[in-house]
Structures are given as structure tokens and as C-alpha cells.
Image (cartoon, rainbow, N blue to C red):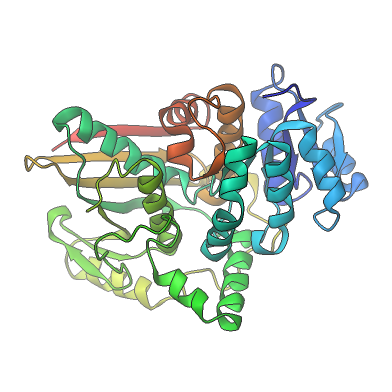
Length: 390
């Protein structure tokens, strides 16, 4: 990549999640990384910088409504981290600016219709410019995308073949639903009402897979009893996003998981009548908090620090042996862990993954960064990835 003034610019640094990203970069990389804070209000950025005691971290003024300011910002940096959503409202001009400048980009998007449009509109241009546009670099979908990737890599190394049927199961989780996620969901549903075909996209697990249509997938919308795990399982609110990203990853990895790959994602609720009752209760709930934080708001530091998650990925190899991977995170998934994940994803693109390994295009995390990102997250972001054989 040509020389740039910055390694990373954090766009949306005056927002709640953007502040956490800035705070993480300052604490974890006091030297060796050239980064800046960006947003539309210089005064708010300076206020946040002062509140966080970030010293002389540079300020960049850029506004999603002013394309020229986004182009100037993109041209100054190797990568942009954006926490400014909903992306279907504010994301497209920034993606365009990064593609035109050949600048890498990472976001927290969980909006499949916008992701579908972004792939269609910008994938070819990003391949030409060398920009790596990596979607969904937070809790949706890094732990899930990389959890499947790690499991399949282990299966292939062990037997020469991937696992054809993988179950993703949330074993433990504590955290607050993201206000940004809630806002994105509302915008997505509003678009679906305006454009009926969008509802079909939301129910198609392969809508991001570049035209590939694999086998029928489990719906994940009703409680089931997982006999092999001795537990009931309930619908998981992020599954409709994560499953689509994982099938895109498989397509971008030349179907390393197989063209017959089947995957679903649910929340374990335990065995017996108690587990069944819990699964039914979760299935009948709205899925999001009744009163989630508004965009720009979020849990306290104590609440973020008390959060965690533990996700199991499991399946049978072609020889009939059970192989599992487990991914854990040490902070609130939607804020504390997400802010670390997106920061490390940007650094991985800038420092670890060159154009030869990952040329330009619109990506999900696993095919863009793979093991390099796993190693970073384990080393710096409070996450673990373990593989075991039953």
C-alpha cells in the first residue's frame, strides 16, 4: 500500500462504541500505531479526547453527508474503523470513499440487506483498487465466523475433510443488547416493508454467498432438543446475521467447508423440563430488550467488565468422531469485546495481512484474516479459541 499519514482512523469516535475503540487503542498501543479520531463535530471529538486523556491524538473532521470530506479522510489512512450506523443510512458513502482510495475498511454491520447491496455495488471495484472491505467485525460475527473457521481447519488437518454439519450453540452469555443493533434492526424492518423482496433476503441463508445456493438449512426459529448435547436449544437473536456471514465465508474460501455444509446457531437452555420451559420462554420473547440503549448510549464500565460469552461449535467428522471448538470473550459482547475485536481486525489488515494474501474485495472476517486474526484476538483482546475431541 502507498504511504499514508495514518495506519487507522476511528470514524465515529465521539459515539459510545467509537469512544471504547479509541480508549482501547490508546491503552493497548501507546506507540507503534499511528491513529486518529474522526467524526462530524470537531468540538465533540476534542471533548472526548480530553475526557479520555488521549493527549494529542489527531482529530479528523468528516461527515457522512459530505462525500468530499469522506474522500479526504480515506486518502489519509491505511484503514478506517467505522462505528457509525445504521450502515444502510450512513455507510455507503464511506465504503465508496474507501474503495476509491484503496483504503481498508472494517465495520460492525449486522444489516444483511445493506451488506447484499454493498457486495453487489462495490466488490468488483474493491478488487480493482485493492481495498479490503470487511463487514461484521464485532460480536456479529467474529466469534461465530472464526469459531467455525477454527473448527473446520482442525477437521481438515485431522481427516482431510471438513465437517458437513456444524452446530453453533451459545453456552453462556451476559451483556446488554446494543442500541446500534436495535436501530439497525428497526431500519432493516422498515426497508422490508417498503421493499417486499427484502423479506426474502432476510430468510435466505445464502443471500450473501455470491449466487451459491446450498442445501436446506435448519430454521433455528423454534425450540429444539439437541439429543447429542443433552440440552434444549432456543432461537438466538443474532443467528440470522451470523449464518449468512458464515455461508459467505465458505463461498469466499472456495467452499472449504463443503458445498453440502449445514449450519445453525442457537442458545443452549439446559436439559429436562426446566430447559424446555426456558427455551419456550426465549422463543416467545421479542428477542431484543424492550428498552435497549439508544445509539450513543451503553452499559457502564462495571457492567461491560462483568460481561462474557462462551460459544460452542460442534459436529461429527466423516469418520464419526465428534470435534468441537469453543470461543470465549471476557467482556460484554456488544460493547467491551466488540470494541476490542474491531480494533484488532483493522490492525490485522494493516500489519499482518498483505495484498498477496488478501487482495481487494468485500469480505467477512474469516476469509479476510483467518488465523492471523485468531492469533491477535487471543494475544490482545481477551478471547480464547480451543479445539477438543470427544
